Length: 307
Image 1 (cartoon, rainbow, N blue to C red):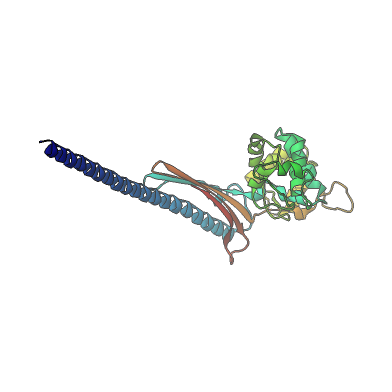
Image 2: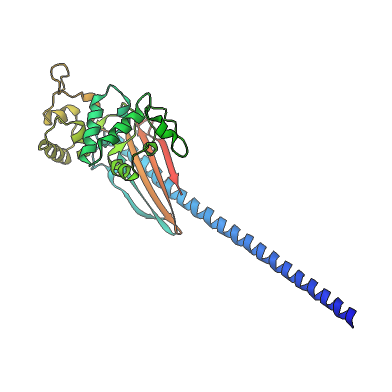
């Protein structure tokens, strides 16, 4: 009897081991199947998000091309200024907004050490929006041809940074500057852009704080008059704008004269901010578009997407 009970026990143990192994295998296969299904769903969702971002980007380029064919003047009433609001995706939405980058202060103006007008203007802009002058000094040093002198502060970062100096390519690069709080960068961001150093300011779209900063010769009482004038009828020439502003363009005769080449009535550079949501996930894309001519059309200078 004893050997038979032992054999029976052995068989029972083996059966239990086999059942456990089969159960484990089933769980493993189900987990793989579920993981595969989840990955497939994530991939499909990401594809829908990407298509939504691509669609608004393509629409923005088309709108800017059509706007250029309508004439050389760019103003806040143009077709490109109308946002894309909550267009439907499969189970979500996508929205987008085009902004004229030549209505903002170009940080790369500060890369020209001879451009004292830009340095003064940036200091005035910081003062108007309640930021410390030290931020202006740090940003100017960061984009100077030689780069900042306080390199030890950059080496103390994790990971270490070795700033090269000169014009920057993305506004995000300003986050590398030590001792500038993110809240201050967030405060500054709506008023600045990063474009080629020779870019001009569009007098028909420039924001009030930027206009007051880059043209301090204009009195505070005169600025609202200029803004109302261009709202009713955009300026058709830089000379008309400067005449209305009471500013001279004779650089030899007056120290307060303004170089008209710093300004324009139209724009070549536009930014697009796109947000898409689908199935509980979201994605964002920022695009810088360059629009030179009707023949070349609107081209993508850079894009940054986050999923």
